Image (cartoon, rainbow, N blue to C red; front, side):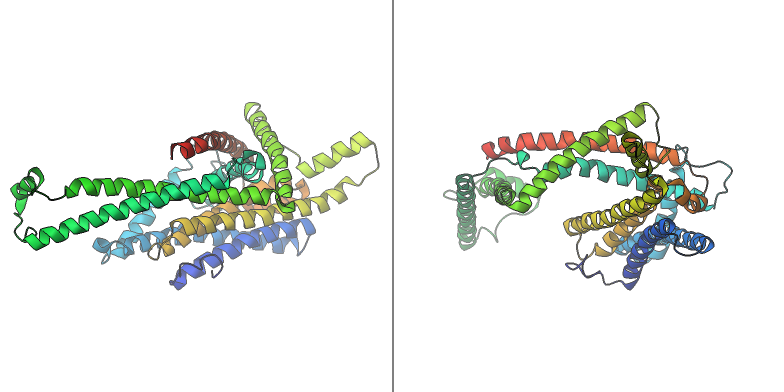
Length: 430
């Protein structure tokens, strides 16, 4: 809590507990995946802990977090303060209605399951979480090479920065000058007694607009000019900060670490193209992999080289390493994204609600990660996970991920292309 939300104190103890418990149980699911691969604990013990873990995290995500979000939102509205418990229940019931209706258009589970079965809840949480994962993955696959590669950096010189800073200072001087004129005019009007003797009401306002005192300033016109200049100064300031950041990135790209990340950018560009291509193939041909990628890759290599190789033994160890990397990068990437998001929109009043929203997103993200990581594991390690999750339509989640990933990646490419194209034009206009 101190690391993530150090700028805004989260005073409510229940919010801290909910966020911490959600994060703990989310990480425990990944820990249980590692246990499945390594064979730690008895299979019945692992099954029990899977069931317990899923029940607790579903209880938090579907009942506790939405209720407390509604409670703290209502608490910030003065008109509803006396009946905040009642309105919090109304907000939670509204959430439950839309949450339940979410499952109607999707073929996510077998119709034989009851209303309150664990499959009903996981299937709906999985749709939201997989959608979130695909959106983040699609944007990340495009934004990562765009951020790391020096090819996309526009050329910025010290002369460009100085010219823009000089323009910003001139704008600030004009704002100060015009505000001084307004202050002098107000003082002159006050000395003449025009402030106290000014007529009130609608007709008085019309008269003050249509008539002017000889020698006095047109204050409304000057104020409009000040507003326009302040807006221009904000744009100039943001553009100046952007130029400084770009200049720092250019200097950083010349270092050894910058060249390393530039190389990673080219690697991720190839990965992005391959991922978009494979997602398109999967959608067009309605294809879902039957074999985990590690085992499949080892089998292709062994058959191509024609060597003796224990595929089962090495697939276990390589799967362990691969899943570990996926888990660590998923947790790290999500926490970094959530922290940036929190810093961008949080305030002293909204911090409790924002932290609960982040807990909700984090829990759904990790539950859906288990649904998708399952396909990266060899079949013998999927057994307990499949039994715990129930008769879900796992193929649907992978197809849905491909569709949302493709839409997100293509939209991100279009957005970044337009932003990169308009940046020089905006600089020239300013």
